[in-house]
Length: 523
Image (cartoon, rainbow, N blue to C red; front, side, top):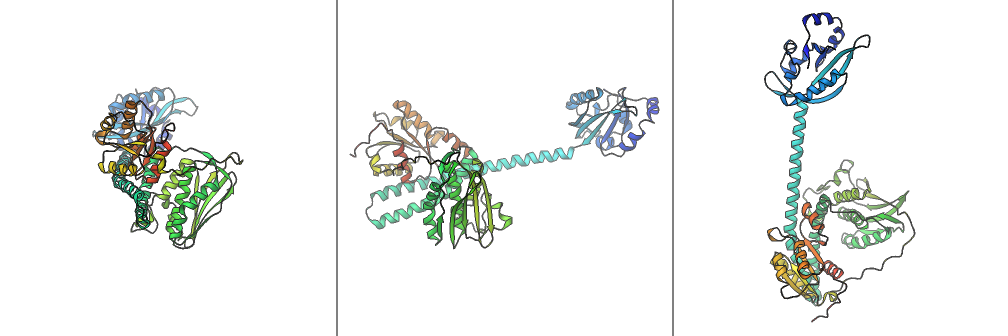
C-alpha cells in the first residue's frame, strides 16, 4: 500500500516536516506521515516500543505497515489506508499487531489528511495507540460477568430446589391439618389445629417471598392496571395486619381516602402490605399509621412507624435482597430481608416511585406515589365474593395427580372430608388409565413437576383429550425456578404455589368448577 521515501525525497521534504516531527517525536503513540505520493516520509520513535521494530527497520519494509499487522487483520487495515489515501479520516479502529518477537498486541489506529502551509493536500498521518492492557481488562470483565451470571443461575437453582423440597412437606401438613380440623368438634382440638395452620402459614410467608423474586426473574408477572378506590385497599390491609400489630402491643390505624387510583391493585396490595409488615416487624412500641396524601396527579400512600429508624448510609442497602438492619443473628422471626427488595422491584414493574424518610431513634415513613384515575366518578361496586362452602363440592369428582404418595394421601383426605370423590394418579399414564371406567372428573388438581420430566399440565391436557371435555385444570407447584414458573404460567391453567391453604384450595376449586354442572348431593 505504501512505500518508503528515497533518501533524496527525505532530504527534500526535511524542511517541511520539522514542525510535525518536533511534536510527534515526543508523543506516546506510534505516528507515521505518508506523503501525497504514498511514500512513507517519517515514523516516530514510539514504533519500537509498540512493535519491537525501529523506525529505520520500518522504513525499509516494502509493505509497511501491513507486515506488522496480524495476518487476519491485514485486509481491514488495507481498507483503512485506502480511505486515508482518498483523503478520508477515521478514529479508533482496533486491530492486532504482530511484534518483532512474535507477541500479539492490540492497537487502535486513527488517520487524518495533512495539508501544507498553502492548504494543499500533503498526504496523511496515522496514529496507533497500544490498547493491549485495555483489551485484557475487557476480557477479564467479560469473564467476571460470565462467572457472576453462572453464580446467579446456581443461586436461583438452589433456591428453587430448596423451596420445592420445603414446600412438599408443608403442603402435606396443610392438607392433613385441614382434613383434621374439618373432622373435629372439640373446640380445644380445633384451636390446636389452627395453631398448626398458623405455623405453616408463617413458613409459607417466607417461601412466598422467595417465589416473588423468582416470578420477577422469570418475567411471568404482567401488571393488570385498573381503577379502584384507595380506601378499599387500605381497609383490607388494615384488617389483614391489625392482629399482627396487636400481638406486639402496637396501635395501628389508617386514614382512608376516597380518591380513585389507576394501577395493578393486587401488586400495589403486595407493595403496601410489605411496607406495613416491615414496619410491624421492626417496631417494638408505639404505632403504625397507614395514610394517603394528594400530590398533583398522584396519590401518595404512606406507611409511618415509631421504630428505631434507619441511618442515612443504610437507606439504599435496605432495598437489597437478603439485607437486614440489626439482625446479624438472622432471626427468622424478622423475615428473610426480601420484603423491601420485592417492594422496589414490584414498584419498578408498575413504574411507581418509592421513597423513604427516617429519623434514627424516632421512626420511618415509606411513600409510594400512585397515579390518579382519569375519572374520579364512582363506579358501581361489584357484589362481594361469597366465601366458598365445602358443601359446594359435595359429590363432585376431583382427579389428583402427584408423584408423591404422601401428597396424594393428604389431598385425598382433605377432599374426602369435603364430600368429594377422588380419582388418584401418580403420572400422565395413570391419569389416562383412571378414565378407563368411563368416569370424567369435574376438575383436575395436578402437581406441576412429575417423574421422568412429565408435568401436571401434560396430565391435564391428556385427560382433556381422552375425555373430550374442557375440564378445569389447577396446577400446584413448589417450584421457584424462573424457567419452570414461566412454563407453568404459560399453560393457561390456574397456578397455585405450595403450600396451598385448605380454604384457598376450596375457594379455587369452587370458583373453577364447570358452571353448567349442578352440584351433586352428598352420598
